[in-house]
Length: 211
Image 1 (spheres, rainbow, N blue to C red):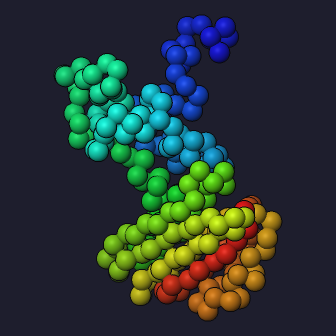
Image 2: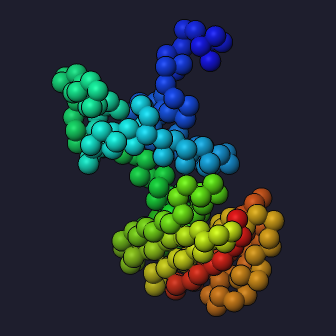
Image 3: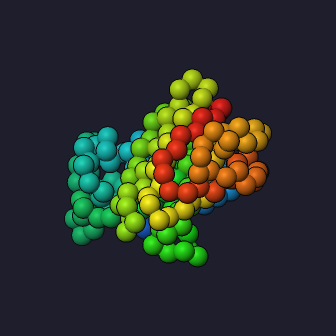
């Protein structure tokens, strides 16, 4: 890359590291998932080279820092004028983890999680094989989680009483109808690209799909 872009500062950093700050960090992973590049969002999440979320963890972080390099074992502490060790901005990745990785999201047409949108995004490269998340809404606890076992994915979800949900489940080319038929309270709606869409009443459900 140096020969092609000799003036770019990015040539000094590893591939799949971040080049955004406070204004871009909260949108980069959601946008990648929205355009079908969740594999790259996972690669960014799991990178531990500078600058990345796990770089700070590798250097001892137990909270979110204000700078990607607030501290490093090699260089010590960063500039003290802007070096908080408890600063949420870069922690915005948690929104993607809830909304896309686990798949729990609200419906803007029915606020307050009266109607829930579920869009779990599996790590098809199996870097992460187990995810479990809960959100304590005003109607009760929403649970969404999945695990990869071999070439199968098991997705479990709990929808609180007096609410409904729409599930967008990654099923590839499978119709998903057989999954819907064995779950009372689940209605098969149809296909949307590589996802199968279901409408669901309150209750707990489990789905099995192939990678």
